[in-house]
Image (tube, rainbow, N blue to C red; front, side, top):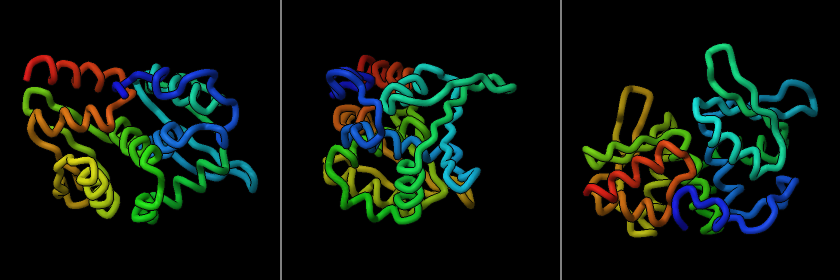
Length: 199
């Protein structure tokens, strides 16, 4: 599956309900909530809000879910708001107990890592360095173990006193990540292509 190749990953019509989204897409959405605001405003109102400068990435999430509203904030960020109890609960459970990610399907796990990378990752093509940041150390160790199953070498280091980083070095290892996990984020797709074109 090529990074950004949405139609190959999800052939046919995009379903209208979250329950009908396939495992890879659903995993991607849950992983992407690592950088989203998740809260309950009323008794039965569960809200997820993503903010990005890149509207196209938010449009993809909206298309996968078949619902949501995108608006422009005062700080010139695009905001996608979705109401979903299922996403709210799944996200809370997985990020509070990352080890449960290991029990998910292969497609869900790959989708989750793609969503996490799109939301919290960086790629430096000139330094051959890919990183995923999180304050959740156990989450990154779990991701590192899963990547190892796909033959992708990674390590977890301390970025600051509260932020940890999963790191992948070398063009070869990043290429394997590109092939097995990939990205939907337009800016990261450009960087991946530059790295593979000019190793």
